[in-house]
Image (cartoon, rainbow, N blue to C red):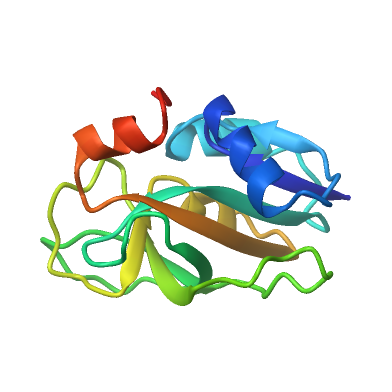
Length: 159
């Protein structure tokens, strides 16, 4: 089975805009690690997961469509051995042409500043990818340049 995962109901509009021909079932997970684990832990690991959602970036323009190639946790104050999780290209003909390919750093809180450039920041993808699904792909739309105010404005009320 294949699933689209979005963090919040307001991101459902992204599916209609960027994946209009995709009819996979949609799972609204909620924001953050605990919500991801609770929403997805019972799915079969043979499932293909497509995560679409908003993300911040220090330097990509707002509205940039990013295909995520790999995901890591963001912990800028400490260094410890941790795997980088590689994502699968989404190749069933439904994928829009991404403007960028980049790394995604997942966080446990909204990122308001970072020295990392040419990447995106979210709060779910590393947790999705770490659950061991056969295939995980992600499309992120830049909603802000590390501004909570801009995020709320662009996402039109997504909380």
